[in-house]
Length: 147
Image (tube, rainbow, N blue to C red; front, top):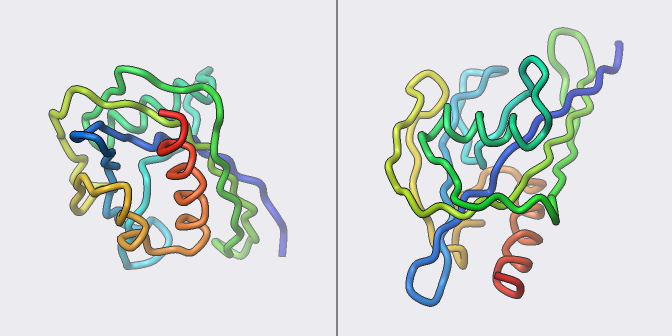
C-alpha cells in the first residue's frame, strides 16, 4: 500500500453573540463513504492559491460566509490517516480563525447537508470525530482567552 500526503485548509468561522461566541459547523457529505459528518469548512488548494486564499474560498463555496477578519496566527492543525483507493492517506488540515459579521448563509447542496451556528461552549458535542473535537477545544480555549 502506497502512502500519500494530503493537505487542506479551512476556517473556524465564529461570531460574537452578546458576551460569548458561536461557531458555524457544517454537516458534510463524505466523498469517501456513503455517510455524513459534522465538521468545520475546509478544502484543497486550487491553482496558485496560498493557504489563506484556499481557506477563504472553501468557506465561501461551502457556506456563503466571508470573514471580516481572518487571523493568520495562530493556526490549528488537524492530522489523521485513512485508506482510500488502495492507498494510505496522511492528511493535514490547517485551520484559521475567521470572524464573521455578515450572516448570509448559502450552503453548497452537493457538499453540505445542513449547517448552523452553535454556542462555542457546546459545539464540540456536535462534532463527529475525536481528533476534530481535540482541535476545536484548543481553538475554543484561544478564542475565549484572546478574542
